[in-house]
Length: 297
Image 1 (cartoon, rainbow, N blue to C red):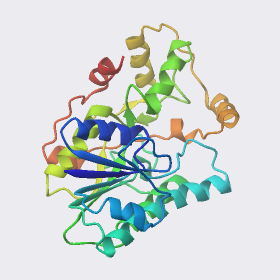
Image 2: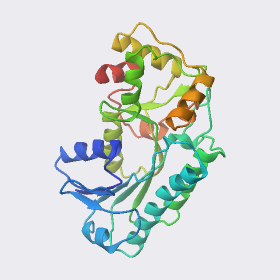
Image 3: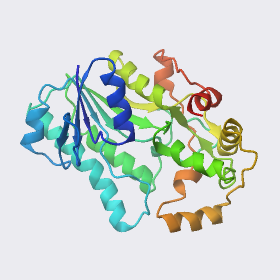
Image 4: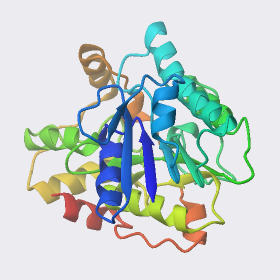
């Protein structure tokens, strides 16, 4: 297959590119900073040059969007929203003009679309979607994505949780904290952490491609979320670190301000269930935290 990954030079795009390349598929990356031969320059806006180069795309995966690992200033809020909506609408235009006709179009979303939940499973059907900045970003993103339907194209919004991998994402940032004795729980430690191993993330995308009955919003997350306290304890055990100093909320607030991020990334409770994947028969290679961390440490 010919697979195009828009915004594909980051952590998740690299995972998918390596996964599908290893299986013999042709990969094209749309990137603001193209470096490799299979990378095409784009800014997220409609342009005939990149459209012409991806005309034979079978699978379209759009991961474009400014990182939310920043302070939510008015400027950054606008950039976060625009960097998601503009590329999505540019791809819509290319499809509407019949310049590209993929069989399936994946558009990134996030498990952050659901409200803070400590006891209620957030499934695709029954999950509660709230009304703060982060949730509204996801809502606007999905509204733009589903704004026009093309009968011959499957639309899939990827409501992805934290992807744990060796070379990027949250796990790469958590390991040094544990190594230097700062791997205690964050805040109260009772907030749920929904996560998925990098291999299962790629396998889930592959599974959705093959399963033509799957469409719409899909929770891409492992089936067994744990509380933050348990996650950090298990990570310390795997890394052989006996000491883990807890980080209370006030300390996180100060630290977040100093390094230019938001505490929501650590303190929001994400209790997300991959109901569609499970009901469709997807088998996770790392369904629980122990198996996941064993592979990563």
